[in-house]
Image 1: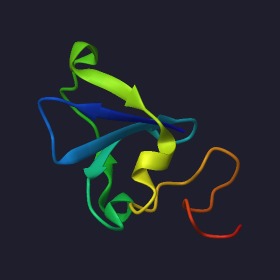
Image 2: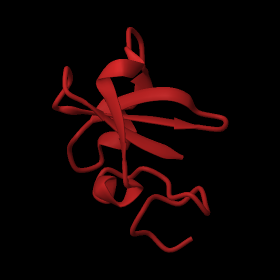
Image 3: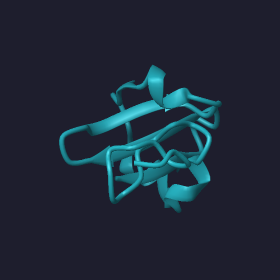
Length: 72
């Protein structure tokens, strides 16, 4: 899973991963639960950020399907 931010959507996180594709979700606690397909995303406007920055959103970490901060 890779995590991204966009200057055009400062209140959203974007993620890409196998089996998930491109999704967007609110930059808030448990925002991953509100994810939806990302549409209209311009690759010029996004930058990859460390996955750990989304620790409180519930996004799964790279090594498991468990959300960050939750034991698998």
